[in-house]
Amino acid sequence: MLFKIKSIAIHFVLCAIITNTIYAGCGGCQINNKVKPSIESSAFLDEKPKSSKIDGFVIASCSRCNLGNYKNKKCSMAIEIDKNVYEVKGHTHDHRKAHNDDGICNALRIAHVSGNIKGNNFLAESFTLMDRPK
Image 1 (cartoon, rainbow, N blue to C red):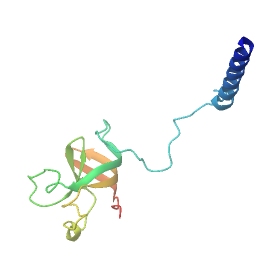
Image 2: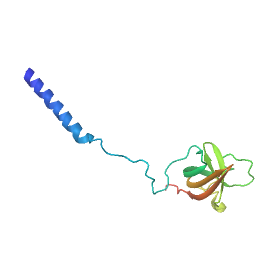
Image 3: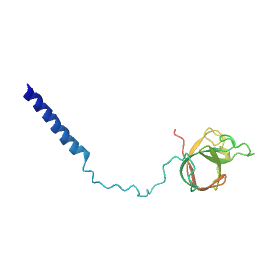
Image 4: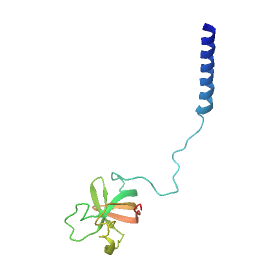
């Protein structure tokens, strides 16, 4: 009986070692995380970077209607990062569509943007509102 238990234990240990060796790999792979991706950033920006250079996804909507910038007398596109609202400069929106169900005055939208923050303005190099899922 004792021989049978030892045999089973040895068999179990050998199986564990072989399985571990097969799935663990050698550990010699060199990973280079400094490769620059060739696609746009997929980061959702939740704080303003120190460099003020923005590249990623942000909340975009009407600065007056949805983002609380009531000093504006008219509706205008803005982005929100870390509860700060930045007026978008260098991008125009179709104001005729602003009051549609998915327009900037009625909905918070996600936008992929790149550009710089200067003061209370976002100077857009690119600005793309994401389509709403259907």
